[in-house]
Image (cartoon, rainbow, N blue to C red; front, top):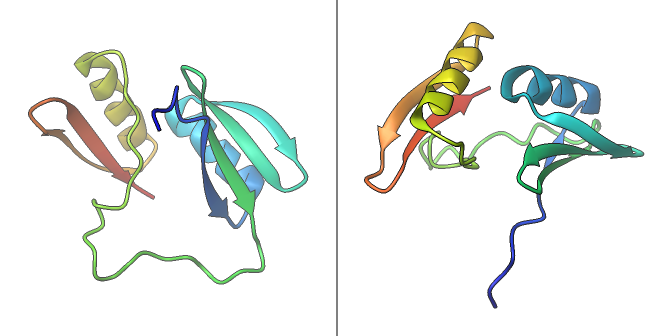
Length: 113
Protein backbone atom coordinates (compact mmCIF):
# COMPACT_ATOMS: atom_id res chain seq x y z
CA UNK A 1 0.00 0.00 0.00
CA UNK A 2 1.29 3.46 -0.91
CA UNK A 3 -0.13 6.33 1.09
CA UNK A 4 -0.83 9.89 -0.04
CA UNK A 5 0.63 11.39 3.13
CA UNK A 6 0.64 10.81 6.85
CA UNK A 7 -2.53 12.41 8.19
CA UNK A 8 -1.32 12.59 11.78
CA UNK A 9 1.12 11.12 14.23
CA UNK A 10 -0.19 10.70 17.77
CA UNK A 11 1.57 10.75 21.12
CA UNK A 12 0.42 10.99 24.68
CA UNK A 13 0.99 13.89 27.04
CA UNK A 14 0.34 14.74 30.68
CA UNK A 15 -1.02 18.26 30.11
CA UNK A 16 -2.64 19.35 26.85
CA UNK A 17 -2.21 23.11 27.41
CA UNK A 18 1.48 22.79 28.26
CA UNK A 19 2.00 20.60 25.18
CA UNK A 20 0.22 23.04 22.85
CA UNK A 21 2.15 25.97 24.34
CA UNK A 22 5.49 24.14 23.76
CA UNK A 23 4.83 23.38 20.08
CA UNK A 24 3.44 26.85 19.36
CA UNK A 25 6.38 28.55 21.11
CA UNK A 26 9.21 26.34 19.87
CA UNK A 27 8.10 25.13 16.43
CA UNK A 28 5.56 27.81 15.42
CA UNK A 29 2.85 25.19 14.92
CA UNK A 30 -0.74 26.39 14.98
CA UNK A 31 -3.22 24.87 17.39
CA UNK A 32 -6.01 23.38 15.26
CA UNK A 33 -8.53 21.55 17.40
CA UNK A 34 -9.23 20.01 20.78
CA UNK A 35 -11.77 17.25 21.27
CA UNK A 36 -12.06 16.74 25.00
CA UNK A 37 -8.47 15.94 26.02
CA UNK A 38 -7.31 15.16 22.46
CA UNK A 39 -5.50 17.98 20.66
CA UNK A 40 -4.23 18.53 17.16
CA UNK A 41 -1.50 20.86 15.86
CA UNK A 42 -0.92 21.96 12.27
CA UNK A 43 2.59 20.81 11.37
CA UNK A 44 2.29 22.33 7.87
CA UNK A 45 1.75 20.76 4.45
CA UNK A 46 -1.44 19.01 5.56
CA UNK A 47 0.39 17.15 8.32
CA UNK A 48 -1.08 17.01 11.81
CA UNK A 49 0.61 16.26 15.13
CA UNK A 50 -1.84 14.86 17.70
CA UNK A 51 -1.58 14.42 21.46
CA UNK A 52 -3.89 12.58 23.79
CA UNK A 53 -3.85 13.87 27.34
CA UNK A 54 -3.46 11.07 29.88
CA UNK A 55 -2.71 12.94 33.12
CA UNK A 56 -3.19 9.96 35.44
CA UNK A 57 -0.89 7.57 33.60
CA UNK A 58 2.67 6.97 34.76
CA UNK A 59 5.40 8.91 32.94
CA UNK A 60 6.16 7.28 29.62
CA UNK A 61 9.93 7.72 29.72
CA UNK A 62 12.30 6.46 27.05
CA UNK A 63 13.65 3.06 26.19
CA UNK A 64 16.86 3.02 28.23
CA UNK A 65 18.35 0.43 25.85
CA UNK A 66 18.11 2.83 22.90
CA UNK A 67 20.14 6.02 22.43
CA UNK A 68 18.06 9.17 23.03
CA UNK A 69 18.50 10.41 19.45
CA UNK A 70 17.00 7.24 17.90
CA UNK A 71 13.44 7.83 19.14
CA UNK A 72 12.23 10.85 17.20
CA UNK A 73 9.91 12.31 14.62
CA UNK A 74 11.42 14.18 11.67
CA UNK A 75 9.96 17.33 10.09
CA UNK A 76 11.09 18.48 6.65
CA UNK A 77 11.67 22.23 6.21
CA UNK A 78 12.26 24.35 3.11
CA UNK A 79 16.00 24.93 3.44
CA UNK A 80 19.14 24.58 5.53
CA UNK A 81 18.60 28.20 6.57
CA UNK A 82 15.13 27.32 7.90
CA UNK A 83 16.69 24.39 9.79
CA UNK A 84 19.33 26.68 11.32
CA UNK A 85 16.63 29.21 12.26
CA UNK A 86 14.59 26.48 13.94
CA UNK A 87 17.68 25.36 15.85
CA UNK A 88 18.37 28.93 17.00
CA UNK A 89 14.76 29.39 18.14
CA UNK A 90 14.78 26.12 20.08
CA UNK A 91 18.10 26.97 21.75
CA UNK A 92 16.88 30.49 22.58
CA UNK A 93 13.95 28.84 24.35
CA UNK A 94 16.29 26.62 26.38
CA UNK A 95 15.80 23.40 24.40
CA UNK A 96 18.83 21.14 23.95
CA UNK A 97 19.61 20.67 20.24
CA UNK A 98 22.03 18.28 18.51
CA UNK A 99 23.08 18.92 14.91
CA UNK A 100 22.65 19.62 12.09
CA UNK A 101 23.65 16.07 11.33
CA UNK A 102 24.45 15.18 7.73
CA UNK A 103 22.62 12.02 6.61
CA UNK A 104 23.95 12.31 3.03
CA UNK A 105 20.50 12.77 1.45
CA UNK A 106 19.31 15.26 4.11
CA UNK A 107 20.43 17.12 7.22
CA UNK A 108 18.63 17.09 10.53
CA UNK A 109 18.67 18.49 14.03
CA UNK A 110 17.57 16.58 17.11
CA UNK A 111 15.97 18.36 20.03
CA UNK A 112 15.23 17.03 23.48
CA UNK A 113 12.70 18.21 25.99
